[in-house]
Image 1 (cartoon, one colour):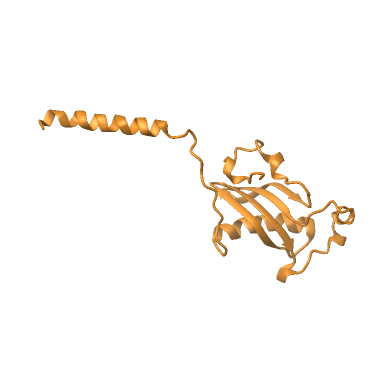
Image 2 (cartoon, rainbow, N blue to C red):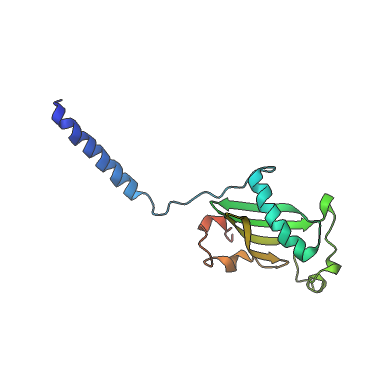
Length: 152
């Protein structure tokens, strides 16, 4: 093959690659990840959430995580708060006791957090709801759609 055809072949190959990339779905979906237990990222997310939960429930609080989804700088957490070592939260001493007595209360919390230069910031926090709170958060913030769960 003569030398002067090589640039044409390279251009053709690059053009073909450009067309293939252009055909990929726009905004290819990011994958939500769950930070592993004992990882610094998971600890940082839960520590920020703990500050908020302890302001509502008193100290100390730890979590039984049901779901944690992270995409880029955003994270969603669904967890049950408890006292250290697995003890129950004494709801009597919280503003949630009346809801608990009325039967319209789930002990789980949901939160939407964002990683900022100052650390993870709790954007949304919902505790005790019987309906998923994340539904009302959709579209409020520039979150990737994969960070929030979907209703089945």
